[in-house]
Structures are given as C-alpha cells and as structure tokens.
Image (cartoon, rainbow, N blue to C red; front, side, top):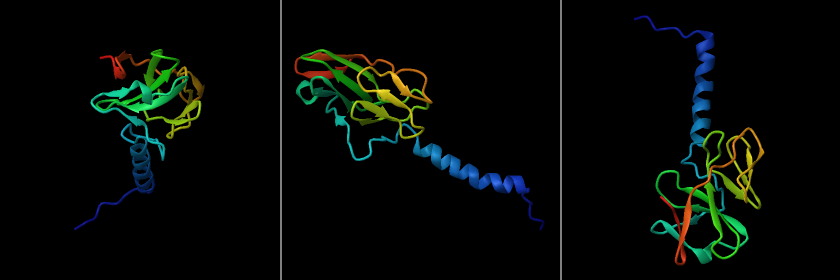
Length: 141
C-alpha cells in the first residue's frame, strides 16, 4: 500500500497551524483574561451598588452571553457601563489600574471612558446599558 506523501510546504504548515489554532483558542472570549484579579460577580444578574466603588471603574461578570461589563461609577447612582471585550478581536479585558489591557494583542483602553489608548484596536468600547434599581446595579436589557 502506498503512503501519501506530504509536500515540504504542507509538512511545515501543519505544526504552525496547530500552534496558531492553540494560540487563537487562548484568545477566545471564554478566556476571562483576568489573571489573578477576579471580576466582581453578579448574583442573580445584579451587583450591590455598595460593591461598586465611587469614582472608580470595576469589571463585573453579569453571566450569560458576553457577561463582562466595565462599570464606571461617579458618585451616588451616577453609573455607566461599557463592554469588557476588546474591539479588535473580542478577547476579555483585564483591569490594570486606570486602564484595561487586552491579553491577546496588547490593545489598551481607558477604564473610565472606554477610549482606545493603544492599538491594534481602533474602536472605543461600546456602551452597555445599566440601571440602578434600589441598591442593585443590573444590565438594562
């Protein structure tokens, strides 16, 4: 029985393709990208307003599809939400002080406005509607 032969080009591409797929899998949105800093987790789809510090931004896992939201709180009930995913390739962002870092390709965003600070991302983080109901913060769906 004759064995099929691989061309040199194909033989070189196979390991590279496998490594590339592994690398892409590491950047999938399921990879939370938070390292050792865990996002605030929303129980029953909400977080207590008191758990979101004033004059700061906090990543929150609201669960479901595209669960990560950056909450930016001023004082009192002044709160806004932005997507917690890089606009370049959809990787989950990690918070580093006043910036959000993309672990996949190095984009950085301002953690108070969602503006791109460093590419390759070119689009700001989209707003995510949030609402304060009593003493809880929820996504406004």
